[in-house]
Image (cartoon, rainbow, N blue to C red; front, side):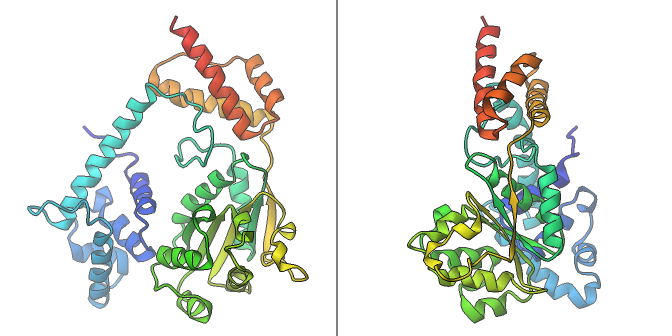
Length: 345
């Protein structure tokens, strides 16, 4: 019999993967909860919209919009859209668990060696930072995460995005600026993620009024390159400023904001004073130990192997890496590989 314990969490992951809007999320999460599957559409409408007599047309519009996000999987002409999507979701849920177990049989637990950690089961060690960042956001300020490469800024941004998805009044949008090369690229990406017509300036501010956007900008250092102008940064500042702005910013950079954007000479740095800096630090020895044990425990449980690091090995890893997460990962990867190969001899 299938275990549905992670079903609700799985649905929220689908929401992020398929970039459902706030109203689409409301429909999707209620329609496909296990306890709601036998409800008719009018009953689900009441859960989503309240008074169904007033909101039925809005509910149908929201439902149609959500199903369009899954048009490539709604191919079974013999099923209704609800039945076809539910069938696909259940198959994906089951295969996801099976694939995870199968892949773990051959995988070194200490990966990836670079790049963001997108799997929430493998993200580790930044709960305190997430709490502090949301406390800052709730106080009315935006946030700048500052830290050298490899400390986990991108992974932290993705974790903030996952956390914000569960907050009913916030729409999180993550943009990696390494993939954009002009102001036009940026506005197109932002507007497409929000679900509005591509625009900028006064029209963009007007269209953002119904929203509360949490805009997560990764590698904001790239905004100082020649293809981004000071105008786009100044508009972001204007949109994030004030007591009740349409968006708040969480930006990630490798250096302090007051040293970025040399093309803004004799001017205030666009993000200065509206972003409170949060300095990302290496892990301490206790965190390194807990990280190693958590990864080994998670993978050992799946693989039924008995590879463990002893206390001296963990201390040595901390001393040689200084708690730098990417360096810790590399050292652990190499040690696990060595122990695994010798264990098989």
